[in-house]
Image 1 (cartoon, chains in turn blue, red):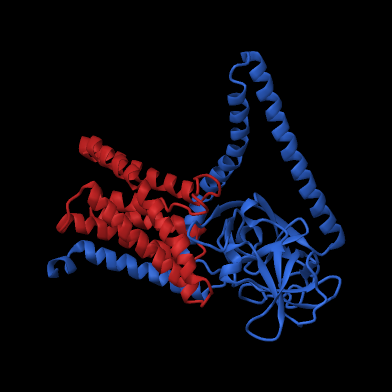
Image 2 (cartoon, rainbow over the protein chains, first blue to last red; image 1 turned 90 degrees about the vertical axis):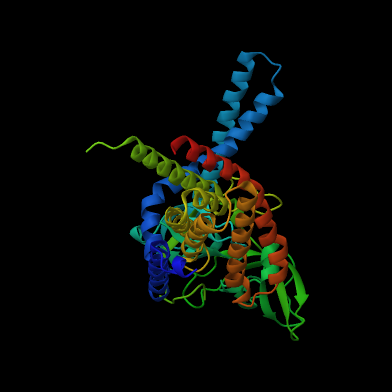
Length: 286
Length: 171
């Protein structure tokens, strides 16, 4: 044991360990929330990430082709090719239709909010160990993204930037209990902040606590951002109320909310890097 | 300067192992690329680092672990640098144990991967749930983190035999 502790290998291990810990300390005190070695690796491996993400997106197209070919295996070769070709076109058409819908929504958001400055960003990764659906986007500080910038998909709020590297950033979604968003229900104007809990997050839900027992908020109501705090702009859609539950902790109720977008199904999002009334508050959400 | 045959083989081997680790990182961290079982993902980098450390010994194992950890940190929602520290330790410890007190075989690989998997997931869970006092912590540990260890261990032989074959071919 003594010989092992005095070995070169163990000394190298301690040196690297100390360097990594120093990197972690630097990350903790910096504005980017990202360790220097992670930022460097992110810059080097950025193209690889984008390539793998593109492959992943194409794989869903491949499965459609594969299914079509398999089910028509007995048909003539020419007919199969024709079907595969048409399937390809259909996939492209559906993709284009989806993109068009997305850009139309963004155009609508932009028209309603001329002060918004967007950066479009592909979703390039997800941490398999994270249960709260944190995502890595393919845009970073080089593109003007900063910690606490809101992330949207159409008119829907997805989450907030939690750390930034030069070419990537990480976002916490509405399903992360650390993310709090000032919000109100549009018909009753009852407000508070939307957050989630460990258990609700696993069901893909969040909640609006602090409602009075006799609340007029009903299932199906829409909850939007209030803009209070200056982290999120006003009137981005968070989601719809699923149910109203009596809070066992006190005499209030809370609304269980289903977010408007499925964080697990996103390929592209927009980061709002600037908007009227934005503050430079640090930390996740408001 | 001309490289000797052994040096060439060593470079080739290190290149292949580094490529394998990068491929595992891409498969593991790209949404939709590697199948999840009932929402439970595999953490492919853990067996990749452990098996490489077992065949390459402590110091190279440390650097393979460092590479894997730094790449994982790009995607990680956990504390900054946690993956680099953890995987570097797994690579180093695997190599050191095989070099001193353990035999290099599939059973040992299973044991080391399972231990590394439990250690990683427990530490991650501690930072993600316990330290922040989130509810449902134990349920998350039992229904997500431990099954993830099991899924990861099941995939370990694939890495073990790849690393073994590369090592045998390249000395």
